[in-house]
Length: 356
Image (cartoon, rainbow, N blue to C red; front, side, top):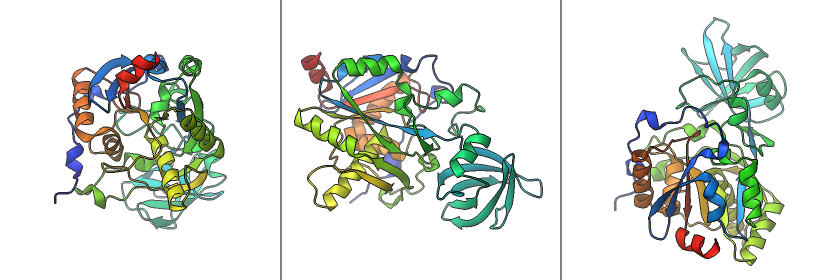
């Protein structure tokens, strides 16, 4: 029997559809809605999101804060090295990606504006380095905003604010949870006025989120690890929402992975519902996955053949999602981190009519 292939999640995207800068207002983006029951879509605006939520729903966001994770360095020979933080491991040690014109070796000391980084050893696709100081503080002081590779310009002063959510508070991410970038104070207030509760998880997005799937059979792909915290307060909010018949609405694929990872662990422990949890997840959500927590999803548009697109297809069906993506391309939507949004829910229009 034929397995699910990476190429099954391919679509054509003209380069001009990739958003290179944020809009002037966070909540000015377009929003494509996809009804999971019928597979139909509609063109809307992100400011309409509260009208698609029902009183009693629970909106869950990721409160991770992006670190200034990209650092310019130089070898003793004068060769340039780019250092990209993956995650802090200890007070003065970190796992990083290193890019240089010639091979890197253990023992190398990379000079930076903040002092030398000692390369300790290779760990799979990453390098462990010793940093001259506390890792997060060091990168925040000497690094720069780690814009994704498809944004073909250097970061400017505005990116320090706009590539960060309004509610970012837990430092550790090297990429933004981009669905949350659409929320400004007015949109958050409109959600609350709708009678929708808000809760948070933390998933520190790693640089591995941009790594391509290199195998054709996606079941052979090994996900990168990311640090997650699902607090007790959020688990209690989920239980309250379930009790009152509300939906669990995830803002971003990072929230989906955090919640569903915690739910899987709870099932393994024989628990009836989701429980508080902190640890690393390598959960790879692709078609066939059984969702236990998330009922609706707000997300940005994702790269062709990426694990994030596979997650969205698992949630709403591969063919409906890819048809919606083709419409978004033709309709001029802006793609990826600084781009537009997509809202996926079951019987979307019927729920809206019943609750508006």
